[in-house]
Image (cartoon, rainbow, N blue to C red; front, side, top):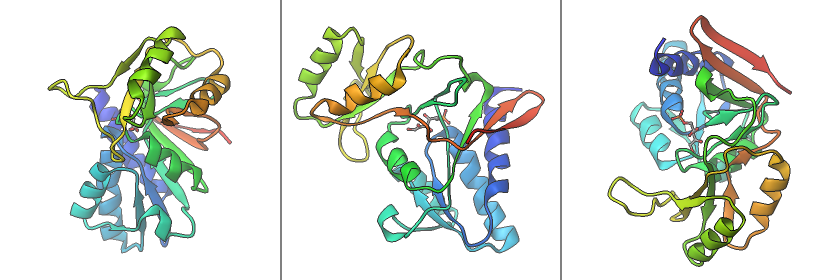
Length: 227
Ligand SMILES: O=C(CO)[C@H](O)[C@H](O)COP(=O)(O)O
């Protein structure tokens, strides 16, 4: 199966976990897009009362266009379940997220969710994290200094750029620095180091976050119950 078909497969599978009256965190990305479409369909056909909490302007736009009721993360007293994509999931179910530059809101919503499901195609499952560049969201002020510091540490950083060469701006008007690490042998230490740097708003290691991974394989979706 093509990667796009696998994304659709897991996106549609994930809505099996959504039940009436739930408050559901809606992640960001091309896999989540299939899930949001499937969720809107399920809400209509099963007449469900669902409230969505979005993690990006992009997902908000899609969810609104499909008639999904939305509340902001600060308007709800809990989130039952969040369904999101991931860029890499390691053998011990740690993850890198932020390929879509939405890591800050994604982490806030994930941290406030009772359960987190990641939907990925099989190419995202890796032995060790780090082949995918680790996104770090930084405030613009002083960001060149951070880039220089990361370069000195051997992290091979680069500002994420748009197709016309502008620095990518997140929904919070911050920049993204991608770290080209190759491998991350000590993710917890790396996460702590990055969060300690002044000007870093958030970093893309999502550690001990996911409860269930739904991965798309050629023979169908496989569900991994993690914690
Ligand atoms: O973290 C994310 C956005 O910030 C996405 O969930 C991640 O990049 C996966 O995206 P896709 O499903 O398009 O591969």
